[in-house]
Length: 168
Image (cartoon, rainbow, N blue to C red; front, top):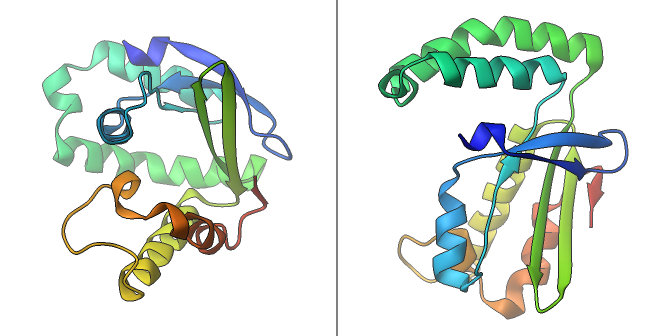
């Protein structure tokens, strides 16, 4: 199970170092296909560590069809939300996204940290909308990794990093 494969990842600043578990994300395959990156992994972490342990237990004991059910996922999220909010009040809320790309004997990393992951997603969606409005993205349904022309990436990333505590 990918949740049992983990590595230690540094997010710097107030997030620090966390144990991150592999996740089955659709962008792993699309980055591999579209950009030709030979090996792509996505990992995630939550804190406190108890949350990660609970997630691993749920995956181990619940049947896969139930775990694949959007209805079940929504119900579980609804039940867990009050506890999540209490933990956020007690230990704080922070989100970090780190992308490491390795090849040719070197590794490049990108890091975004902020208070809320939803905020990062909203800012990134708004930055993509600006790209569409300015004609920087071709018409059609595209994955982000194939949508933005190389000469527009710097401006896009500047817009997508608004409100971040860290953006390297």
